[in-house]
Length: 124
Image 1 (tube, one colour):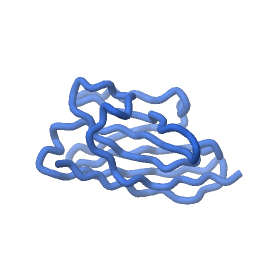
Image 2 (cartoon, helix red, strand yellow):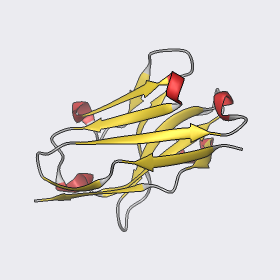
Image 3 (cartoon, rainbow, N blue to C red):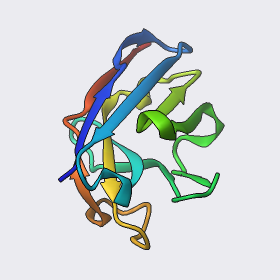
Image 4 (cartoon, rainbow, N blue to C red):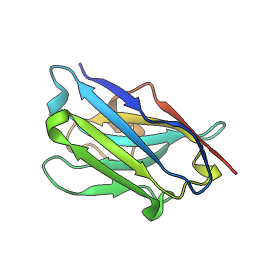
């Protein structure tokens, strides 16, 4: 079992920044690799970023370009998503999720565990 808890969402004006956090726990947590997804109202879930195990590689979705940076603090079982120059189209619920190794990193069904999400709202 793996538990994931996101935090850091909120309301911000366009051009502002937010930093999301996701902390994982559970007896099998270290067997999984984390990623970020988001879902806007009326839209499909969208891949944002994902890590690889034991490597510094981070994958990003096409829609986030260089405004978002994902990082992790392994000792604290925590990953982060730094979001800069936010736009109204970034408004969504942001989810942290965990996948087993060798699963496709940018596909939602690859992920076995999901957090409850944190709301990000960007006003124009």
